[in-house]
Image (cartoon, rainbow, N blue to C red; front, side):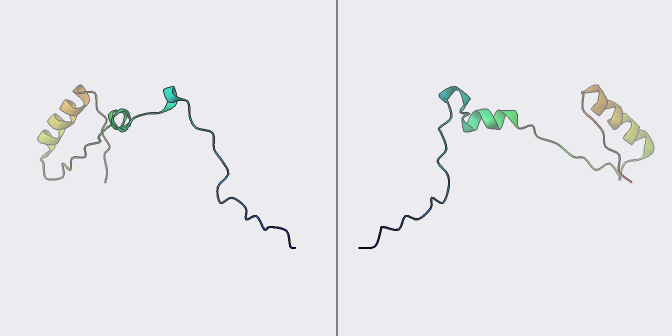
Length: 66
């Protein structure tokens, strides 16, 4: 008789994570921060300066594009 042919495993076995390392979907969702993008090209210079100052006062960053 011919020996039985064993096919290799598609994925190697992985040990389960400890329960304290597993995050729920809600915990992961809380860690993700929303990033808001505002286009200010339609504002005049003074309005743009005022909004930029407000954004900085709120502790956010500005990215100026050309």
